[in-house]
Image (cartoon, rainbow, N blue to C red; front, side):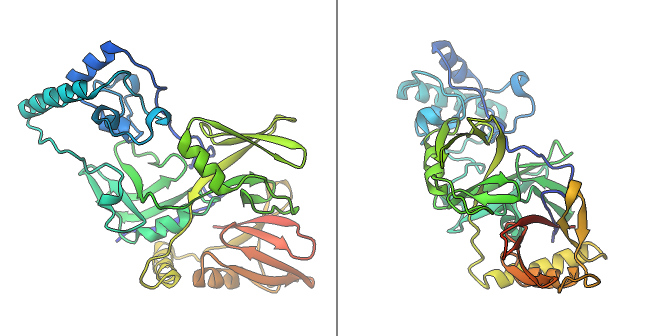
Amino acid sequence: MAEYEDSGEESVSGFSDTDTDSHADSQSGSDSDQDSAATQKVCKYYNEGNCRYGKKCRDLHVCKYSLKGNCRYGSSCRFKHIQGSDRSSRQEYRGRRSQGDTRRGYRHRSRSRSDSSDESLSGRPYKWQLDLGQGWEDVAHDYILEAQYSRPNTKGIRIYNTPCGALSIDFTKMRILKKTKLRVRRKGSRQNEWLWHYRGNHGWYQYGEKDSKGNASSISSASLEKEYQKNRQGTVQFTVDSTTYKIRFRDMSQKNLSTGHRRRIRRRPKYESPRDGGVNVVTRAFKNLTSSSSNKAPLWQYGGKRGRWHSFSHRGACSVSSEDIEEEYQNDPQGSISFTVNGDPYTIDFKKMTQTNTKTSATRQVQRV
């Protein structure tokens, strides 16, 4: 059984601070490409978005679904397509590959295990898997990974007690840090609801919802997801008051076209609790796993001036301690807690990892370390 530790926005320096997915070559090709495709083996790692050999790879870097004629993204696919690949050329490719695979001892399957489709999920909305050198294997209690992945402020998670020891998963680039031969992936259902967030001055905010100043963008998560599915390399423009912003899917950024200021954006799934037990299952697992991974209890802190962090404590005028906040967090990692400081009311949102003065609406970032 693996043990887990979540890695927040500020707590782990090893995790990527950018939201750039690894994108493949732009779509291009020719008749000679088709001939090459007919005699080369398609690189499965390229199709999973993480071939470490790049241009030096001896296998073909091309969308495997385009060769089969069933790529559902068509011209908006982020992987390379071969122009003019009609049915006859695909049949020729399959025939030559079948002969080559037989000589090399491969068993050809019409659908590989790495295909991300609803058929392999057994009715589940998602499935997390690790490849530790022996092929893809399901992660036990993967709803814990999913719960952390759904939070836009969480960069990654650390897994303990695996056959390869402790592993740090970077959610942004979906890779295992400092382990070049190990891989991680999330397989999701087409029915997953994806939420879009941008990095504000006081934490992460969902598109279409109000920020700490009461302002809301004119575009919603649903609209962004629709445009993203049309073209994952594209852009979207929208306005807030009289200011125009531009979102670039390629590098996951939002730009103020007037000032040039850029913000990071993130696309994360809406969390779906396990069918049996709901959030209580996640709570119990978090209690067991995080407590056994370290003898030291997690510490809750709020952000101050000059990037400094301060721990919650009863010794001041605060009505709650770090232990009180942790207890409430264990009860519901997606919930909140209300308290007072010098009589002023505050609320901590565990999902957004923010602290808000409910009287002035001033917001600070919080972290769990």
